[in-house]
Length: 430
Image (cartoon, rainbow, N blue to C red):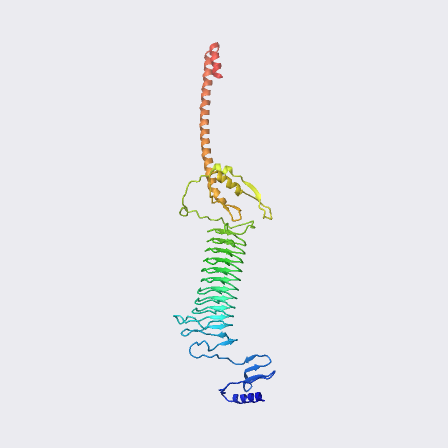
């Protein structure tokens, strides 16, 4: 009966334009009952006992007393902040935080009015440690969790940019992206991309790309596990597991699935394709830099005809070639032996990978072949000169023999019956 009298009295009060309640309303709803606040036939607010839900049929206006007081305009859940737009005194505010313990009631204003402003945190504990950072967007549980004064960051996904404290201009999309540290001007898209990232200006697209890059800067990785172990700078890897073995190497380019440079510490190298590739084509010939200004310690090559003559050209079929096409070339291990015989160490034409496989740069053989051709030309010129001399001598000898024959004939004609002279002539003829 007390409940009924209370509701009747409340409705009677609402029929006027304004209803003032200076005391507290303290009553109990019966099973299946509801509490309604309405203006005639229009509901403003209702509480259902059976569902435990509250319904708002009009706009809700949160309190605004003074300037950004922490306990004004806040919706809480179990005593913890859940929805608010808190910003410190003197700031331009414009914050929005939704989620259990999202945002921070102890942030400071900083020296500029825009400090601690223009932030959006959606998700439990998102931007939960924010102090003076501005223009951050965090969507996902614990996204930008530790961010204090970092600004202009975008984090989407559980734990994205979790431990970033003061890094700025980062974009992290995916769970645990740029999780452990932070850095600045990094872009990570994909689960655990740039997970340990603390460097600058890295781009990681794909699951676990640049996962271990704690100190690396200016790297670009596209494809799952690309540059996953990289700590170096200025590396580019495109493809699944591309450049995944690089550790401290720098300024390398790997294109293609499992494309790897010869060593995990390699620098300034390019690899296109993996060990399964059996064909590579390009519309025009490669142009290779050869300017004198790029070179030093320039010396005449010591490899020539002798070196070339020791090489063992072979034909072969690659094991991974399904079409079994015949190719022609050299065996790198045999070439290594010949180079050592010629006193050549540390030859750039030969490379041995970390797995022990040999690779050969065939264009380095052009210079020895040119020298071999020049040596053959010199030998040919020498032989040609000797042949010309022999030809001249032969001609002179023929002329002498002709004169001798003429002389013999003259003598015979003058003394046809002289036994002594005939003996002399016979000797001359022989």
